[in-house]
Amino acid sequence: MAVILVVDDDREFSDVLVRMLRSLGHEALIAHDGSSAVQRYGSTRPDLVLMDVVMPETDGLGATKALRQRWPDARIIGMTGGGAFDVDLLLSVMGWLGAQRTLQKPFTVDELKEAIAAVLPGGEKPSAD
Image 1 (tube, rainbow, N blue to C red):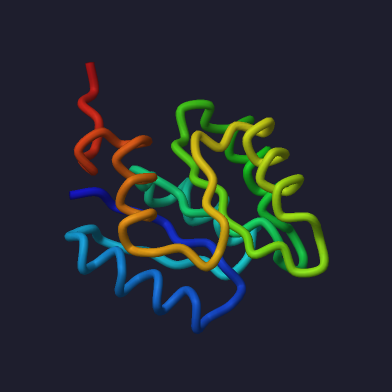
Image 2: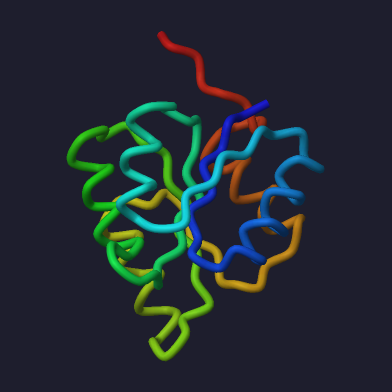
């Protein structure tokens, strides 16, 4: 299955998301802010990134932009509960910046599985043709 980088400043949510991913057969890596996510992506090159939008320091918007600039083929799913911001707007901006899919928190295991399958068909690492 896929190696997925979970990027979220909420450690409890990250832990839940890691358990969800493992239950689907994926390997999960964690970063708790956008800067760490960009560094971790560069060193591990995961198959997919699950990127929270609202985080202190470097947020998901900035991290997604940085990933896209350095690795245009990065596969990213943006996610947010919105916080004090408009959820639809944040998720739209993630799409404009290059996230292939978005999820509104909270989401179910089935919604997560569907998003992963849409970005990584079969939930597998794409072949290097």
